[in-house]
Image (cartoon, rainbow, N blue to C red; front, side):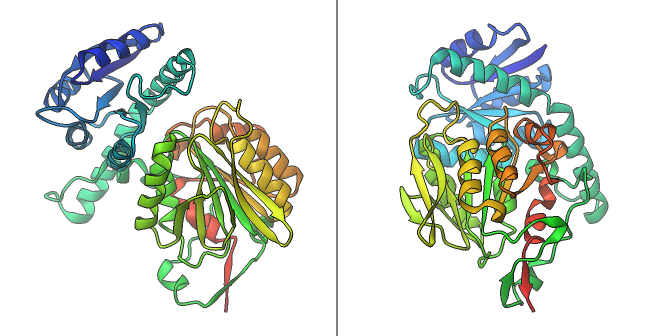
Length: 389
């Protein structure tokens, strides 16, 4: 039984969430809280498996409460956010502080069938609740390492640093070249490490837990990275623009929300607008990034299947596909085509995923050429490219 603490200053939202969650026989709402202060107290008293946390509340807001909970009593948290650009900025900040995912405020997303929304919410609650023990162990280990290295009086590490603390990869990962060394070398060429490459494009499919994971990877890539990167992140339309802007401000490599049609440029990351799909097409001598609404009946928008398939058809053996944390199995069919065309596939390992769904599907299908911990993902990608001496 998954125990949930519902935190929201609106009695209507609390009742709505409780009604949805308790339709599932495996979920029990063990308590509610009206503001951040009460959430901190109830979290300690009830020890829930997961918390749904409103953002805007009186006395103490959800962001402040999240920081306290992650410092004192780390638990899986899903933010309840308005699907607006303002809500996006706050939600992305919450995920940097340790929230595992977000859901829309009741009634703010009318684009999908209500029953499907409820089903997805319950599935997400149960999947993320399983990270409770892992989360606490990671936090404890990171705190112990921090105390040993800096002294007993040092501040405790942030949640995100503990969540992504080093873990043994399932297969040996590539060795990273320090960015300080990379920046001193002039130009790029493509070697063939482990049988992969040379590549002309990278596709990344990612969902639940994706924003901080994508940031971890992109923040370790240099500004002159030699190929374009296309990202299909399951995310509402109002979120993808702020997400791209935030990444662009935090990373050396350029990041933007993709336009309807534009040439794919080296050293640029293209984030697919929410509610649409991102494709790669060969048009004449150019590789083009194309945003489309087709297929309109896709369960996920964007879908990693369309991304992986079109990258494979456009670039063949020169395509590198990366499947990262996320629920479900979106991306596996596209990765099958990528492998048929001679491309190279990387999957994030279970230990570092918030939800080991999408990568697991790729691994279980025997499609992964490499299985890599999040902390090693950027180094593994970089190892497929060398600078010319």
